[in-house]
Each structure stands twice: as C-alpha cells, then as structure tokens.
Length: 302
Ligand code: NAD
Image (cartoon, rainbow, N blue to C red; front, side, top):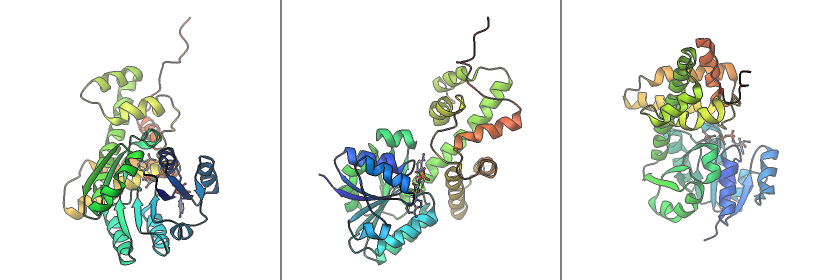
C-alpha cells in the first residue's frame, strides 16, 4: 500500500532512507534545516515542506532522522503542534530516557510514537539492509512494519515499552564502538610489528577476531586512508556516552566501556564534530608512532 510520509532530517542516513521509501512507491514530503539536503531529496522525487510544524499540518505520519537528542525533542515539540500529525516515528539515536520523554509529551498531545533507531550505516541505508529496532504500540508496529522493511529488511519489534528500541540500539552501538577502537589498537600493533594490514583484514575476518570494524570499516575507509565511512565522531561519542549513562543508572557493569569512551572523547576533541569516525585510527597511530595503510597500490620494487 502506498503511504504518504513526512520525513525530517535528510542527512547521511535520512537521505538514503527517504530514497528507499520513494523507491518503494511511497510519497515523501521532506523537511531539513539545510537547504542543500532538501534540494537533493526533492531531485530524487520528494516534495518539500518549509518547516516541521508545516509538515505536521499536512501529513499523519512523520519519520525523523536527526543528529542529537535535543534536536529530536525540539522537532517533536513542533510536530506535536501540527493539526494532522498522529504518529511520530523516530529513526534517530536519542537514548531511552529521551525517547520516554518525547513519547510522553507526544501522547499528551494525542500522538503516538514508534521508537525505531537503525543500525547498519550509510551503506545499509542505501541498500535497505538496516537493522530497525522498534518499540511502541504493537498495533502501530503491525501497521507500519511493511514500510519500515523498505528501510531495513531486518525490522524487529523489541517491545511495547517506550525507549526499548533505543536501549537495544545503544547496546548494539557500544559493541560497534568497542570493536572500532580495539581494532584500531590491534592494527597499530600489527603494523608496528611488520604485519601487512591487508593480510590482517583477511585473517581476522576468517578468524575468531572478526567484527564489523574489520569487515567493513577498515577495508573501505581506514586502510584506503579515505576516512569517509559516513558516521560522524560526534554521533559515535553520543552513543557511547548514552549507553554508559544507562549502565550507570541501572547499576550494570560496563567497565570496558570507560576507556572506549575516552578514545572517542579524544577523537572528538581533536577532530571536531564533523569529522568521520574512521579517523579514530589516526589518533591511535599517533600514540603508536606508526601508520596503518594498504600496501596494495604501492609501487612494485624495480
Ligand atoms: P547527519 O548529521 O548527517 O544528518 C542530520 C540531518 O538533520 C542533517 O541533514 C541536518 O541538516 C538535519 N537537521 C538538523 N537539525 C534539524 C532541525 N532542527 N530540523 C530539520 N533538520 C535538521 O546525521 P546522520 O549520520 O544522518 O544521523 C542521523 C541519526 O541517525 C543520528 O541520531 C545518528 O546517531 C543515527 N545513526 C546514524 C548512523 C550513521 O552511520 N550515520 C547509523 C545509525 C544511526
């Protein structure tokens, strides 16, 4: 069934997710604070709305993919004032407590929320292979599952409790953040000991050290020195921070997470909010005094 969906936040993730919805035959009315991002999605076939509030006067269901919890809260408050909006589907990562606050605020204004963070990166968003972890009213999940499957064919219902999808997402990203830092340290050590990083990728991916950093991020963006994976360090730091806050609030140990957070904190301080998270390798290299790069394109000796 073809749906009309409002979509706010057409960034690294939002733009490919909105394009998947357009590709599945849905009508998308988009809104973004950045005119260039809006223009690009209009070129892909979406209609444009001038503001979140204006969009919420036009459509019943609004998806958002926004960078920070504070921005999600502000945009949700605007959406709640709209005359037509009934359902808010949040694809961003905000953490369970913000999700609960936003859900409660929306419920008071007569709207429902599906908390639906995603995992799988820009590549997964482009291919429609994201993992989508949904919590909220089960009837809305059943109704919107086929649409969410256009975004990610791995769509899971985590439970009705507000914020459960977010909790799932933070746990997933804590593991991803840990794998990235631990792999950067491992590759620095290997390179310093004279191992070929391309061979390290092959061995680890065939062995018990396999993880998504070595499978996807190192071959695409680290060993190539392009540092362009499509996820900003600011967002990785946010996810780790939110996860550790939840662990502390629930009294559950996450000791390994503390040094992982320190690495991301250093990367954020050094590289700033816009830098791609794959640059973490460069900060580990500085400490190790070595560079980790592919040798595939090195000139052959005469
Ligand atoms: P991004 O910074 O690339 O995109 C965010 C978009 O929101 C931008 O286009 C920006 O202009 C827009 N925006 C900001 N404030 C706005 C406002 N007030 N009103 C309207 N538009 C506004 O971020 P992203 O990488 O696409 O991430 C979006 C969300 O998805 C984040 O919560 C992130 O944690 C999560 N996420 C990202 C990835 C990834 O690999 N990039 C993967 C999974 C989840």
